[in-house]
Image (cartoon, rainbow, N blue to C red; front, side):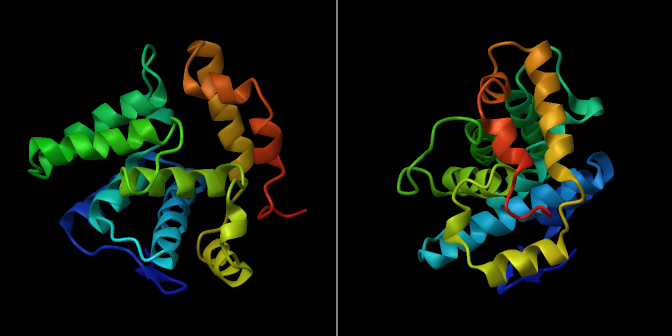
Length: 201
């Protein structure tokens, strides 16, 4: 695990390392790299704007936010982001986090699939939205310089992420009609994702 990419650092400590370990163990390499890139995109966006944020909280949420797309944590009834929120609450209980902080990390994961949140309302939730949107569909990618994106993708290659992620969302859509993933899959999201500017032409 690189502790810094293009001047943006990751938090050091038990919670961050445990979250990273769980992500590595349950996500494939493409999904793990997406989780890491989502953190770096969000953190870089915040730093460029001089925003203070809880780096540990955001990193843990970024590492866990898509784990409910993996078979061991997939729910047959809940949208993946809601199942992921529950997973995060259980995970952080094991770390001894207080209820309020466990609720916060769950909220970040649920809200990353909801309407945009202003940073002055909830900065960490906005950062996860920014990071995942930039990495998945390229939305907002223009906010980042070429040097940053090249360094990030060199450190954490995309590894065919777009195609595999579209398949995951299509599977969610088929099994859970009406969920947020279903709404995205029904529109132009898949086309945008598959033509991501950071993927080879």
